[in-house]
Amino acid sequence: MATTPGWRPTDPAGTIESWPLVDRVGYRLAWAAGIALCLIAASVVLFLAVKGIQFITFDLLADRPIADIDQSKSGGFRDPLIGTVLLTIIGTLLAIPIGVATALWLTEYGRPTRLARAVESGVEVVAGTPSIVLAIFGLLIFSQGIFSFLSFTDTGGAVFGRSFFAAAAMMSLIALPLVVGATREALQAVPGHVREASYALGKTKAATIRRVLLPAVRPGIGTGAALGMGRIAGDTAIVILLLGASLQLQGVGGTPLVGDLRGTGSTLTSYVYLNSPAGEGNAPEKAYAAAFVLLMIVIALNYSISRIARGREGGLSGAV
Amino acid sequence: MLGAVACTVLVLIASMVIFVFAKAWPSFANNGLGWFGGGDVDRQLEDIINGPATESGFIYEIGAFNLLWGTALTTLGAVVIGLGFALFAAIFIVEFAPPRLNRILEPVVRLLAAVPSVVYGLIGVLVIANLVRENLVTADRKDSVNFVVQLTGESLLVAVVILTVMITPIMIAIIVDALRAVPRSWTEGAAALGVNRWRVMWTIAVRTARPAIIAAAVLATARALGEAIMLSMVAGSKGFAPNPFDGFTFFLEPTRPLAATIVEYQESSNLEPVGQTLYAFAAIILISTVALSIGGYLAKQPMRKYGVRP
Image (cartoon, rainbow over all chains, first blue to last red; front, top):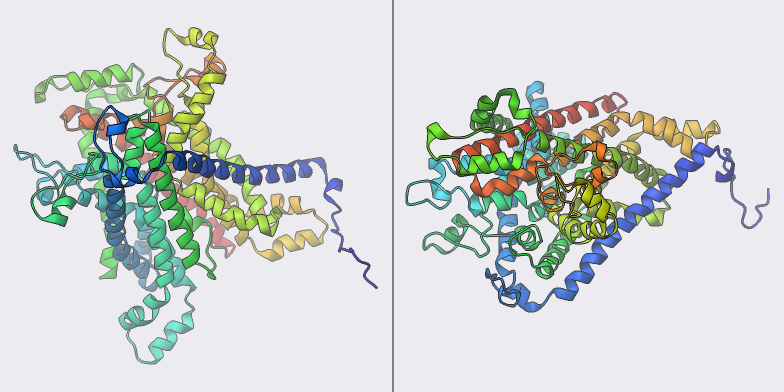
């Protein structure tokens, strides 16, 4: 048969106009939902971009925040920005080894099976535990006497329990399930014959994991870590309860870095919260500017994920 | 060695449940079933804060019904609206979206899931709450409920709308992965019998993915239950139970869920009885989310029966 220009194979079910009414309604609703999704995302990003670029200045990024009613004197968000970076890095560094070890054990060993199933669902439980509960649990744990070296101690001996260390430890629990999930997915994607080839060369299981599997799943770990970093940078409840949310970084003792980490601080998220009408500062312009910077950080992390994961088949649900 | 590290997760969960419940116990023990009863929560919390500072004089009286009701309304509202939306959006992404649009849609879902809750809260309180105040809160409505509560625009409606936007991407992601995992031969078989594309999706793919859809709803419920910051910003921050018999005004009444209450009273948490009351709120959230997470995990299992790993 000579194909005429513009000829297309016809759908045996007919064109959309010939479908039953219910099906056409469903089809249109699906389109509407998809387009609404794009519109919502576009309006969130564009709105924040317009407001953010309108109010952001170099001074805002470089100045320390100062509590002042007069907004021209209340400074910028240098300290919250440093707080976000510090917290994200420490939290992720804590989450990666534990997460990778858990994923390795689940896929490579996983005996006894019941225990493995319990750990597997345990990771899901941690993933589902709200950050507010993690925060209040952390507050309870880190105000115990044995953790006094991690935060302020009152003159009366009461441990304050709020510090970068405490917040980062709880933040790592937010990142943990994402690291475990991404690493497991990568491990499962390594074909069985790769492991067998390694055993055939006389390598032990431990050597196989270290020399063969870990290098192979590095992009997976990277994806999980980037996802976790995005989640940590965006969390507010833990910062407000466990970091003290003091505007400036307030170190303890003389040691430069360790002293700061034992002290309290704030992050961009708590800065936005405190400067929104719900908080004490109530300076919407600064909240918009900080929210814009925060959104840019999160988008950058997301973009890096798609760079790392390029060429690999990744599910959508690993990201949430 | 690796096994020991993996098991720390279980130790952690166990200690979380034990510590939080141990700390929360006095609040439950002193109120009995009255804990779940009604009452002016905000006044009760003030009484607890201003109560005597000695062990024997601690006040514990609280009836948290208003907070529980606020939690239930915001969570259920958002999950019910979000689930319908997520189902259609997922079908669109898997089957109907032109490839070029799909390249935008997936990052969009990831982005919406990644936007920090405080950013959603900021937009809610500065933009949407204002819109509601200017367009929906009329003088008549204000007068009709003025004797119990003031309408400020920050309301149940705004809370549900924003919470829906926050949890829908989670559900979309889980449902999309499940729909993609449905064996191609099943849908192609149906299409070859002359079933149209919509009906193939609706009767074959969606039905196969049903466990994942339930799991998506359950996991999204857990996420919504624990949302604290955004809700404390947009829901009006009053321990008030919106009354469904007020007609449309119901949606404009303020409320405050459990999680948001913890955030707002955390500054007083070093006062023993306040702390214990807040841990009681946390215990309720914790036990619900643990149950929901395990429920979601179990709900996903039947998909494995088809050799499908969601």
